Image (cartoon, rainbow, N blue to C red):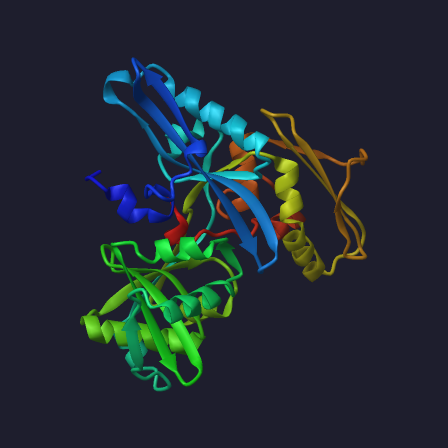
Length: 356
């Protein structure tokens, strides 16, 4: 990467004033740093209340002359141990599926990529060009962006300082649109001509996109979003000319029980909508770690994790199979249990601005 690449793309964690040195793990030889792994504490927020502690991994690097000596493996194992100590539920990273698969990470999650054309938007007679402007550090604009982003049902928790740093990234443009009292914001990756984050009123959102396409003389644009039935995502789905769904992140389960416990409100919500009678017992076990979780779901719509041994078939999966069961919609880990497939995959997403 060119000089200052990390500082400009990831200012919230890579600038001198934002680096958490206690979460940077090194191997030194002859008083020189020869290998490095960075751990970035993250909190995933669902519906504005439920929080999931995670460890993001980034900056994995070994000097060329020292490669092939197992230094990366040593540091990753140490980092996994530190995440266990910190009571993280999950770990996430972006990188080679096969390289990190040896340590239990698996490519998973679900992301929409919509293609929306100017022609389609122009044919919708209820859409009009509106006043749009770029965010350039104005405090009131940042406050509005923060308010809109905090309404998102699936997001990474950000401090005000992190919001400020994130929206200073050099490869993005953040546009705001307004009509009456309604607003929206759209973050455009200028390298890819792709919208990587958005929020606000659904109609103003579409009119903001139309106004951006007109202003930039673009015929189409791609939009990345969670696979989740929010009003904004449903709006994208309704007017998109094309779309794909694909995995977007490598996930490792650090603590299965705490992961299930954190997502319990979501599991309970899905269970309630099934309107089934009788009891259902779900027993999950990870082959490598032997960690086991027992989940009891009953006709009163109660869902609970129990430590008391309950009868039922144990679904034993490898670390990577368990990730696919919980977070992936393509490979159901060879599972034929219809109810299980109605509960999983779990809703989970990380907007591109939070990826490291």
